[in-house]
Amino acid sequence: MTTVDDLQRRVADLLAAYPPESTPRQDFLDARFDAGLAWVHFPEGLGGLNAPRSLQSVVDKELAAAGAPDNDKRRIGIGLGMAAPTILAFGTPDQHRRFLRPLWTEREVWCQLFSEPGAGSDLAALGTRAVRDGDDWVVTGQKVWTSGAHKSQWAILVTRTDPDVPKHRGMTYFVCDMTAPGVEVRPLRQITGEAEFNEVFLSEVRIPDAHRLGAVGEGWKVAQTTLMNERVAIGGAEFPRDGGMVGVVAETWRERPDLRTSELHDRLLKLWVEGESLRLVSSRLRQQLAAGAPGPEGSAVKVAFSELNQAASGLEIELLGEEGLRYDDWTMRRPDGVNFLGREAGYRYLRAKGNSIEGGTSEVLRNIIAERVLGLPSEPRIDKDVAWKDLPR
Image 1 (cartoon, rainbow, N blue to C red):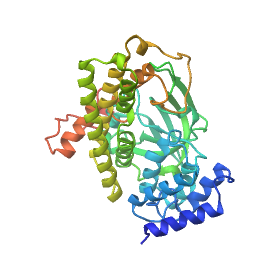
Image 2: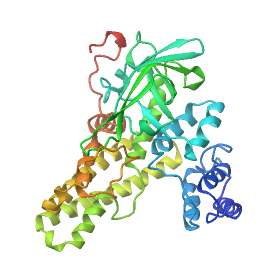
Image 3: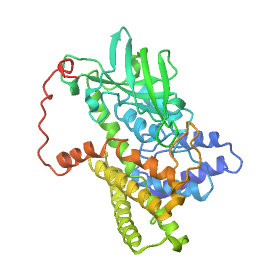
Image 4: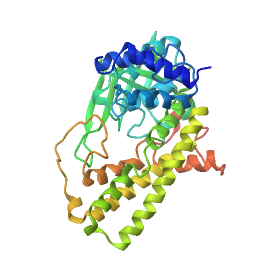
C-alpha cells in the first residue's frame, strides 16, 4: 500500500530528474503523469498509483513548495472534473491510454455537449440523434451553453439512439472529435459582454463506435457519473478561510471604512458565516469523495455555492455604490475561463447570475436533494413510461 513516505520519495525523485527551474513546463507535466503523481488514486500507468485519494494533497504540497509547474485547472477543468472520471469509469483500456494522459498534461482541452435548446434542466429529453452506420455513428443535432467549445479538441457527448423507448433508456454516450467534419461552433454572447459559452451544431458527424463510452442505450447511467462529478467540481472546490467571493467583499469592507453602514455590516457577517459553513461542508464532501465516488450530496454544495456567490456579489455592488456600476470592457471576447476574483465588482455581479443555471439549475438540484438525500417522495412523473418519440414538444 502506498504511504506518505512513498509519495514523498517519488516526488523527490521527480524533482531530482526534472528540476522545475530548468525543465520546460510541458516536459515536467508529462514526467509527473508518468510517475503516477498526476492523480494518485488512478490506476498505475494512467497517472496514478492506486493510492488513497486523500494522499493527493501530499503530492500537491510537496510540488508547490518546490515551485514546480502545475496544469491550468481553469483551462482544462471540464476535462479534469468531468471527462476524466467518466472515461475511467466507463472507458475501455484503449480509451484510458488514448485520452487520459493528454487530458491531464493539457495537450488536449475538453468540453461538454449535454444541454440542448429543448433539453436543459430536463437533460433526458435531449433529441440529438445518433444512428449506427457500420463501425460508425452518424450524429445530427444541436447543443447549447457549451463552455470552451471554441478551444476544445474533444467533447463528452450524450445522444438519442433509440426514440422508441422512454427517454432515460434510449441514450448513448460518446467521445466526439471537435475538429471532425460537420462540427460547427458559434459564440453565445453573455450579459458580461463575453462569449464564454457556445452553441454547437452537429451535422452528420461521424463518430467511430470505438469512441462510445458505456453500452448502447445506457448513456443516462454514464451521464450521471459526469453530472455528479461536475457538481462537486463546481461547488466543492477548496478555498481558504475568508476566501472566495465573501473574502473579496470582506477585504473591501476593511479597506474602505467610508462605505460602511450597520445594515451592510449585519449582512456581511451573515454571509461570512454562510461562507465558512460552505467551506467546512465542502471539506467534508472532499473527504467523502476520497473514500469513494461522489454522491448526490454534491448537489447541495453546488446550490449553496451558487446562492452565496450571488448574494456576496450583490452585497459588493451595494457596498461600492456608484463605483460598483463601472465596467471595464464590454468588448466581445472569448475567454479561456471564468475569473471571478481577477475582475471588477460589476463583472462578478453579472457573471454570478449564471451560477444557479450552469452545472444543473438550482431547481433541479433541490429535487435531487429532496429525493436522494432526504428521501422525500419524488414528484409525479407522467412521462416515465412513455416513448421519447411520443412526448409532446
